[in-house]
Length: 274
Image (cartoon, rainbow, N blue to C red; front, side, top):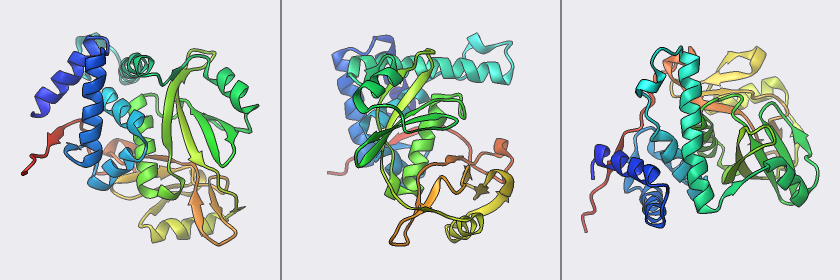
């Protein structure tokens, strides 16, 4: 199967309404993705592994979001932001239709989470956070990313660079305002805050250059990383450093932070020599 055949297959599954056969094929693709027999050229090999550690729901949603047609005539005459919003709407629709059939969709997300786990313990610009014992459950919105595919990339990249606090996608839903949400589970880490200089030193050791200290932005030519302030980076009692939250993206030239990456949805199947 080549790249064209693969996306034709995905689009046929979407158009068919995610039948049991279609769901089975998606599970098969997720298996191949996780085993490295289906290479998603959007990611490096280590990033593809990071995507896999986000769970099957994350892998399948990432592929479905990639199936959205960016060159459709329905976006003609629209400005860049309008086109992005249209892409976001289509991606969210694909994921929602699949998640409902796959049993990982929740209506009234925040109400359900509160009934199961109690009142939220924190709220940020994009996330509502709930205590789940040894883990945290986060309801993540699209405010920072607009498109689901970029929010899903964030999970992939976090798991690649900060696997000790990996994010696992456990489902999807909409809140009381009908806004699309990604449900994520993450280990709970207890620790103390770090200074900006300590965080900068930590990032420098990882090969990241400080770009803008006012919004704690770091970058390599491949990765853009922001929001690295003292509430998102902590030191445990044993002295280990954990990044629990950040804005992390594939660093494209459009971000104007020295990025060289180009976004793609090309796939390649690895031939089995056995």
